Image 1 (cartoon, rainbow, N blue to C red):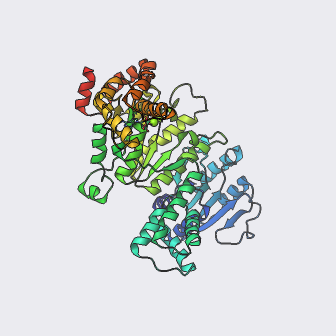
Image 2: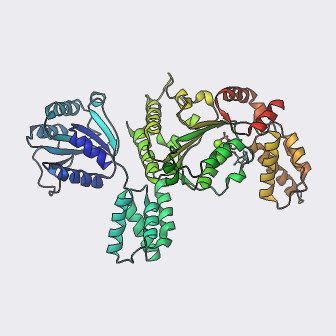
Image 3: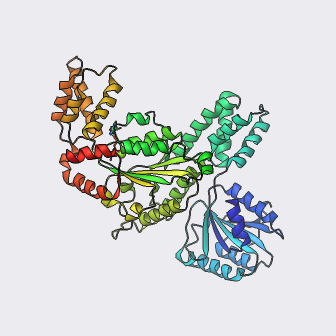
Length: 503
Ligand SMILES: Nc1ncnc2c1ncn2[C@@H]1O[C@H](COP(=O)(O)OP(=O)(O)OP(=O)(O)O)[C@@H](O)[C@H]1O
Ligand SMILES: [Mg+2]
């Protein structure tokens, strides 16, 4: 990222929009870049409270009368010397006609001069008049090398013991995804809690990180105890996932394999889509981050939603390799691209940014999305090449149902030989995995109330009392199946698929 910024500055991009909440770190790296340039450049910083101050100078050494945005930009235009001019938090003022106009004047005047304006702000707000002139980039979160500096500084300050290379790496990796300040805080907390910082404190660092990530509200660290064996059926899908267990290793890169991009799991409600997505984290040994699209949307301020999405994606990238889990994608992007946008186009813009990110991402973030209403999903998602594969999870076949009974009964009782799984499977035609589980639970409640062990007959009674979704929502389910047969790969084995056809 520093590279990118460096290139843009050298290539004399007049107006760069740097999205970040880490002002100090960003300023430092701009100043470092400025010093490596030939000739070196001076760096000036504008804030609405102090006007223009040269970087590194005390705040009272301000340029007179540069507090208002227009005056500041006028001042910048008047400078003959090369320079980098950072305008901090201009976003609330940038829409004012005078501000936009003076920025455009500045850009016109900068031609051939080594001058750049950098708009630095935690959120993106680019007025339409400037869209063509500005280049927007994200300031990435600290990488291992930068975190290493933080950690070293911390240990030196606390006169801590030297860490082994492995311990150090674990502590650094655990802090990936945090800002510099947050990393400092987390290391300090681990130190204070235990009184030292060693490899054993990795867990504290990790759990602190999880809390910090949760606090920002959009990403959530998910820990799933279940393994992929807790999912009945879906053999094809499991095979695909197992085949890719080591897809994010160095070895796979050396072998010449591309990094998997993502998968979309479509299917009937309650058939294990979310479950299998969650268990993949364990299978692949990668962290699972759920992106809550509902929380991305924020109507309080223009650009807020975009900033939320950017931040979340940035965090995911810095924790990568990781799985980014978007459950119920259809609900997240419903209405995007359609004609009836009711939110001033925010959802379309968010959707656009997300697609662009998916298209361009180089970092090993595997997108795992689920959906059950295909017709609500923008067509762009379904285009070939967007995801590595689109799987369709149908209602379970009789064999798959046996498997599901076995899993859920074994979870609850050690010995399940008293159950006739074949009969149960036969009696639950049209039931989803979730409904099968519910029937078992209902049977248990019934028997428990009568203070006895539950039996085959209790489950059968519960099944009879249930009207499965596939019947109450028959039309939707049929439509989804017809659609998916043509366009998605069945998640069940092809043999099972054949059986289903006959059923
Ligand atoms: N194939 C399956 N094997 C084992 N359990 C299953 C299976 N399918 C569903 N279940 C049970 O039902 C629960 C709900 O399933 P899950 O949340 O994965 O469904 P889903 O396909 O994501 O549904 P929705 O479309 O409503 O989100 C699971 O937690 C699990 O206990
Ligand atoms: Mg689900």
